[in-house]
Amino acid sequence: MTAAIRTAPQPQDSITALNPTEILIKVKSAAVNPVDYKLPRLIASKVIRFDVSGVVEKVGADVKDFQVGDDIFGRAMNSKGTISGSLADYTLANMEEVAKKPKWLPFDHAAALPTAYLTGIQSLRAGNVKEGSSVLVIGASGGCGIAGVQLAKAMGASRIVGICSGKNFEFVREMSGIEKVENLELVDYTDDEAMNNFKEKNVGKFDCIYDTATGSGKGEDYVSTMTKLLGEKTGEYVQINGSPSTWTRHFMGKTPSQRTLILTESKGKADLEEIVSLLESSNVKPHLDMKSFDEKGVNEGFEQLKGRRTKGKIVFNMD
Image 1: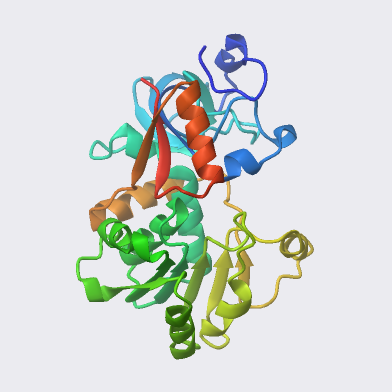
Image 2: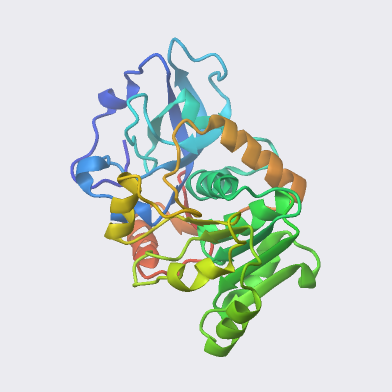
């Protein structure tokens, strides 16, 4: 079996012995995320990563919603809750970690959805985003940021603001699914004057701030300066990364009020189904940066992730 691995290859026998709730997937496409190089090997699998789309090759005895030949997508996590790895010819997934792929969604795009869009929908829910909400997305041009913008729009937010580099404004507008330019406000984080003006004029204006940038690797910290933009007592600041002290407070149950630190929940089948429904309603898809599944392509993809030079999602076509 061909696989992108951390050490030695995973034996074929270990992936074909199915537990009752598991599905064996013939991988068509796989995607990678920043967490894939941040997780230490001790809590990750030998084979690289979560996000996968493919065809059902075999099902466990308790699997009823999927049949051999079904097109599916989701996260390569087995029945024990550990990562099976998606950058391989075959992988395993628990039946609650995958959903059927709709015909309108190509395999490559489906593989780009799970981690970024599951994180996005769970974060926006934590921020109580609904019809008429005002949402600020920090890091709007990355995989999670684009997901946040698209999902916020599909969930009915009436005001959406994205913070990203000015050079990525056009890209974010193009991917947002928001037709009228005036309905998506963008702020250039490299422009100090623009950022200061924005913060001065928007104190207390947002129902949800979705922060995909703080703690992402280069000392970013928006929390201290952006929290004041939340609606008094009702707004929610939702972040997906943070400093070691932030994580410590989270696990001790001492996160400040109006703050949420998101760990993407497992068993995401229902959320995956909702995500594709929302994206179809808005006529949008994730942005792909396609790589070849070979040593050069895998190395290039991970170097790009580490260098924070990615717009949208890095995806490998495995066929």
